[in-house]
Length: 195
Image (tube, rainbow, N blue to C red; front, side, top):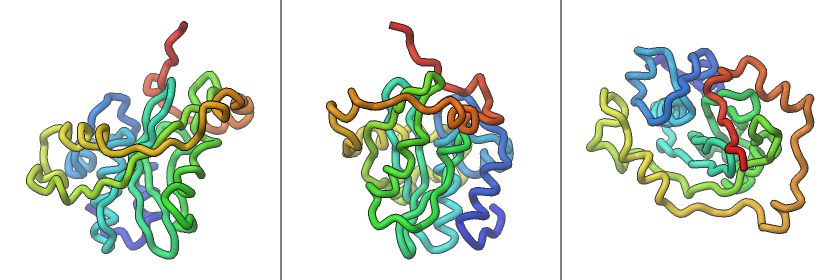
């Protein structure tokens, strides 16, 4: 792993990786060898890199409706911040300026929509410290990290909006959508199911 000095350097590294459209999470060693990552791989990689800088290796699941979930690595210094790999331009890092984890998560809301423009963020998980998976050798294993994914799916999640709020949501503006999907791997974008 390169010697990162600040979270923005981790983000720059993740931005330079090819987006992997397959599901599942791989270790930082596999990410470095293949030079590819999806959002889960990127979050695990960022958590490991943040750990080398003295932060606990924390990840959070952002749960979506009619869209892909998103996983981010979070850290706290002066405030809460995040580092993330994304197939879109709007779901990447956040500066450590947010007073709470919820406030950080809500900063993703307006940029979290599917290819039809439907706002999709609905819930977020409690942070998961990856040190609980040290027996899996999550930093360097060649195996898939399915136990981490399973655990993340079952930890407590918190709603970000109510049903009345959901019914009132507008669609994303076309110009914002174009900016969001700029240079995306189109095969890796979620396709909403037709009713």
